[in-house]
Length: 569
Image 1 (cartoon, rainbow, N blue to C red):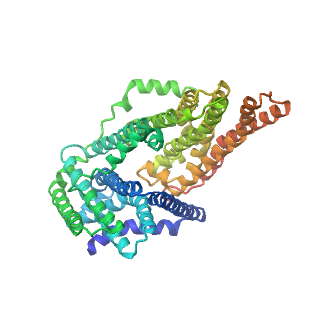
Image 2: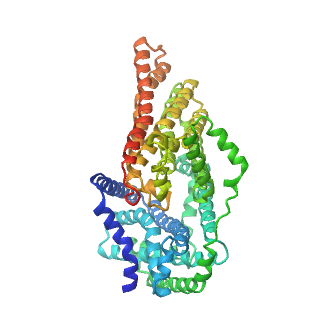
Image 3: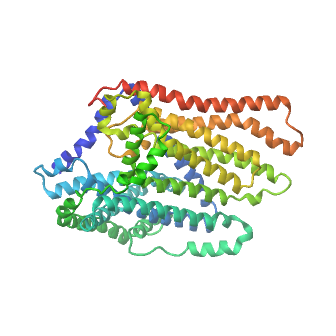
C-alpha cells in the first residue's frame, strides 16, 4: 500500500503544484470552473428532484416509472463505464509517456497494477458518477430516506463502478496481446461515436415524447407493460438496482444481491490482475509499434494543400502544410471528424423531428420563421464547440516544439493567422450546412434563409478568432491530449466568451427579424425608421464578428510571444 501511495503521489502533487504556480488569472479560471461545476451539479440535482417528486405523486404509474428509471440509469451507466475504462486502460497501462520510467523502477507488477487500476478508475468514473449521484440523492430526498440509504448508496456505487474498471483493464490486456494498442484505442473511439449516433437517431425517430399524447393510449399501455419487464438477472446493474430500489421503497433488504455485487467486485479485480500480469510484457512490446504515415505522404494530399494554401505567404503556407499533415498522421485527431459529422447529423435529425405540426392556423408560417431564427442559437453552439476542439487547441498542439516557431523567422501574428486559416473553411461548411438544412426543413421564408447564411458565415470568422486568440493566451504545451484542453478552465472561459458572441449577435439581429416576422401578423410594411434601425443592428452584428476575428488574435499574439522559453511554457 505504501508503494501504491508513492506511485499515485506525482498525480496528486502535480495538481497541487499547478495551483501553487498558477497566476492570479489562472487561479480565477480554476475557481470559476469549480463554481460552474458546482452550480451545474446543484442544477441537475434540482431538476431531477422536481422530476422525481412529480412522478412520485402519480399513483401506480409513477412508482413503475421511477423504478424503471433506476434500472435504465444503472444499465446505461454500466455500459458507459465499461467502454470508457477500456479506452482509459489502454492509455494508462500501455501508451502513457511515464511508463518507461515506472517500469524501470524496482516495483512489483502487483503494485504497478493497482496504482494504474486506481488511476484508471478515477479518470473513467468521476464524470459519470458526478452525473448519476445527484439523481440518487434526489431519490433519497423525495422518499425521505435516512443516513442508512446514503451509506448503502456509497457502498453500492463504489462496488458497481469498480467492476467496469476491472473488466476494462482485463479486456484491454487481452486486446493488446493480439492487436496494436494505438489501433485498438482509435477503433474503439470511432465505434463509440457511431454507436451513440445510431442510438440517438433511433430514439429521435421513435419520438418517445408522443407517449404523453392521450390519443396514443394503446401505445402508452404497451409501453407501461414493457416498463414492468425485469432486467437481465445475474448482472451488476440488476444487483445494484435491486439493492437501491429495496432501500428506497421500504422492501426487505436483498442481502444476496449485495453479497453478489461485492463478491463480483473482488472476483473481477482478481481476474483482471492475473490476466494483466500474464499478458502485460507481450502487450507492452506490441504497443511500441510505430504508425505508418500513408495518407500524410500522399502526393494527392500535397497537391490539395498546395491549392488550398495558394493565397497565403510562403511562411504561413509552410505552417499550414505542417499542421494538416500532423492532423492527418494522428488518428486521435482525424477521427474527431466523425464526431463532428455525428453532431451535424444529430442536430439535423433533431430539427427534422421537432413537433412543428402543432403550429397550425393562420400564424403557422410566423411561428416557423421565429423557430428558424431560434435554431441559429443551436448552430452557434455547435460551431463554438467545434472551434473549442480544434482551433482552441491549435497553438497548444505545437507542444514542446513551440520554441522552434518562437525562434524562427515568423512573427506572432503570422503564426496565429496560419493556425486560424485551416479551421475557417470547416467552420463555414459546418455552420452553413446546419443553418441551411434546419431552415429548409422548417420551410421558413427565403429572408430567414439569408439571415441564417449570413449569421453562420460571420460567426465562423468571429469564433475562429476567439478560439485561436484565447488558445494563444492560455496555451498548454505539456498536454499529450488535445481533447482535454476543451474541458480545462481556459476552455470553459473560451466557451463562455464564444457563447456570449453568439447570443450578442442574435440579440442584435432579433430586432430586424422581429419586425420582419411581425409584418406577417399585422400585414403592415416595415417603416423607414425600422429599416434604418434594423440596418444599424445588422451592421453592428457584423462589426462585432469582425472585432472578434481580429482583436483576440492581436492580443493573443502579444501574450504568446512574451512567454519564457523553453521550460517556462
